[in-house]
Length: 601
Image (cartoon, rainbow, N blue to C red; front, side):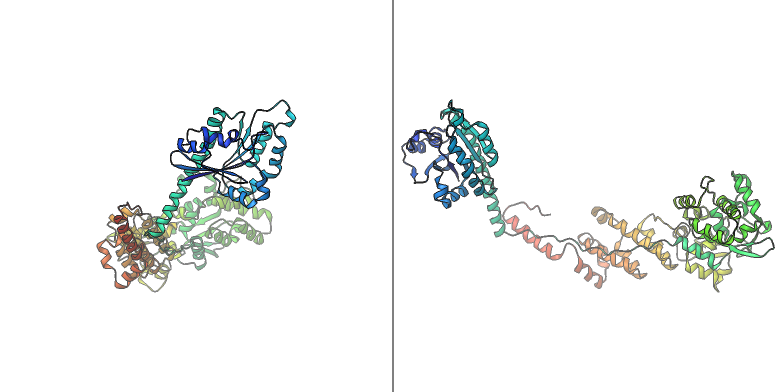
């Protein structure tokens, strides 16, 4: 390994060019302890330096076995007469030294203005260290001397290290200049050693066996969810008037509208009080009691808070609306309630069209506010809309939850696994088309109070009913989600099917590899059920899941239960691929043969 130093400039001032004893480079090579004695003596006897009209070449050994080559160019004319040679010298240099006499300002100015820019251009952003050496003691004539600040400025322009050498003695040459030069030598040697190692590794890598590249597994199929249509289901219930158990009449006993007690009671305590779900003692708000007594006059004999077990369905309750203005707007108010009770501005617009008098409009709206328990401080339409949109209104999944699995207002009882489960036909018909056909068609269930359910466990059926009431579900396990999925498919509730499928997928994806390998849950069994019930999206996803975790599932006994078609699919989409495992085995054998440690996997 070698280090190449190129020195430019004449630091000797008025001394003769042949006076080698006064040369900075010559003095360093002659006095440095790092230069071997043999080479140093040869240098002093001028036996191993080459003279050239443009430069002098020195060769020596440093650090024991590192060859040092120095080209000393005392004349700057080399840049004018032979630019090609000077550029090659700079290109091959590991370190550049620029030296000048502090008592020769004209020469320094020439270097600064002409030659320093040429050197900077030749370096072309290369990371070659540059040393600027200002040699000599300044004489009394300050005008002809190069100041330290001028030298420092030149060093800044070249990104160089600036040194002032007041004398060519042992301190300035051996320790000061020599210390900086040797520091850069060591840096360049380390850099060359690193580059050499990288080159060796690159050559070794190009001739050796490369480790195989593991591709990413295929993207899993995406299962799309389904938006909730809870509000629209209940709104449609009002339009179709199925299972209506309330008939509102005007004071002249003319029928005005039909409704459902379960929906109305989920909206307001006014209706709970009206239909004896709650007693006046349970109601703390006097406004609610007063509103119920002022607005409505029910037929008390027909209002029962629990199911009459002697008949399949109770006769509708007839309720007289005593306020004529409220009665005329009742259909709009019911549509407002059944649609989710948040479109206040639309309700206000409809009431204004029917009631021309602003006073009557305000009175009816105040009645509605009391029914919905809207605070009195919410006193304009914009505030009402904002309040109703932010507040979980009574007609929502949280309100019907109060009546889930209770006999209050229930009008049907399911018999399942020796137990009974109460329910409300209005909710079932609104939320499930199969139930709607069952209770309104020419089926036995339409006139039956007790309806048997077969092929489903009680817990699964309760989870199914809970979804119908509150529009959400949270299965306790993957197996329960699969049972609920089958139940949802039986009753054709598509959104619940999507929820169960997404739950199964999310739970499987969240399993760590160790848990997936040790779990007793059979994914192949899930696949069998998904295919049997035509859950195409789920079965396709499960096949991809098995293929993406091939190394785990291929070791399980259930893997043998896959059909030929399924096995072919898994083998085609498996991760990691058989080709990768083959290449990995070859690479491991190669590494083992070279007695190296494999860190790929």
